[in-house]
Length: 137
Length: 171
Picture 1: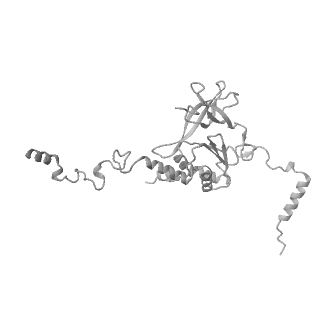
Picture 2 (picture 1 turned 180 degrees about the vertical axis):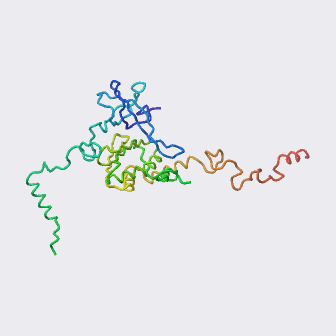
Picture 3 (picture 1 turned 120 degrees about the horizontal axis):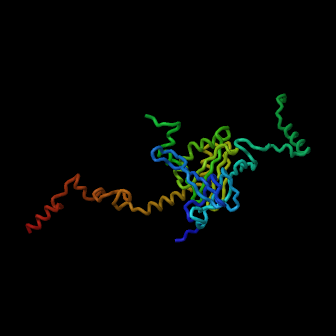
């Protein structure tokens, strides 16, 4: 029986780093929604995985994407770090690509500083055209 | 006595099984980033409140993670098996629009679902009888046109072992 990839069931998982005290290994907590059979409500169930992080670039609190290794690296390490999705303290909004913190952007979104003179005059002319004059009949 | 909670209908099996988004087998992780305040994230909030239980019920092997108030704009992100990531912007969308959109891009089509249903039906034969777990009927007496169960209708004299033995002894 050949297992092409992953000695483990979970091939790709997303979790939060909770410990980096081990050398080149990150302890990642993964939460899954599990249905309570009586309440019929979903609750987060946590599980910790160990991931191989060769460059030791994870900090506690990062949200990371782990990829299953083809075979186990050691007794507990079966995944490796594929990508840091959100770096703690340095979250980049994927839609705009700008750094943000909570619900506000850290840098000014409008690009009015980069516009040249010609651009500003052109834009103001366009705005004049759009203006609806109430005095016209 | 009514159910507890704000919209307790979300906690019924009938509601959960009404979810129609079934992801393709390549979808492994679904991440929802939304904000708890703000009008533009309203659709995302409703999506998380009403539709995520349905989706998770129908796709028990997809990991769903929710992130609150991390970025100003709400979005969904899917991580597929081949390493691909799908980013879905859900700003200013209602929860119905969001479910329709993800059903269209990453959901199994109706034909695939029907095909799978047919395959599953092929495995079990409806005419056989046996344990309730695998068959529709448990005993031959339940099948129409067969001899009814002697617990409810006594067997005719000729079929009973007592009569047959007596006949044999006589002859």
